[in-house]
Image (tube, rainbow, N blue to C red; front, side):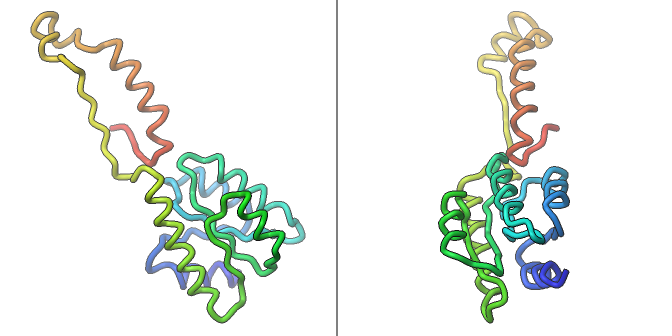
Length: 168
């Protein structure tokens, strides 16, 4: 697809562009990679006028939630209103002389919003058990925080991946 090649060419110096030709491919890509900050989305897929909206709803359920920028060849007031209801962060019409410049600007603004609302992937979580040294002196290091650490590890393992982190 020409539009995917053009998107990569115009945005690659600032973004790691991962094009997808349909919703299923995009969903697979999103579920198999680290969190995406920005998703550029066309609302129409072939003759299906609802596929893009459905995908926007799917994106809203992700944690962290990527910022969505709509890139459409069929702009309308109804689309723009619906985008506001779906919390879309940008709306750019395809095929205009300045479309790529506007798309780049919308993506950069969306990235700024995502960075402001989301936990950075390089965030580090440090866990320390309060009074662990005192407890260890009394009961031995092997008994410090066993129940607490098991519960904490479960909490961290089940939530940190959604914020782009990993347990090591």
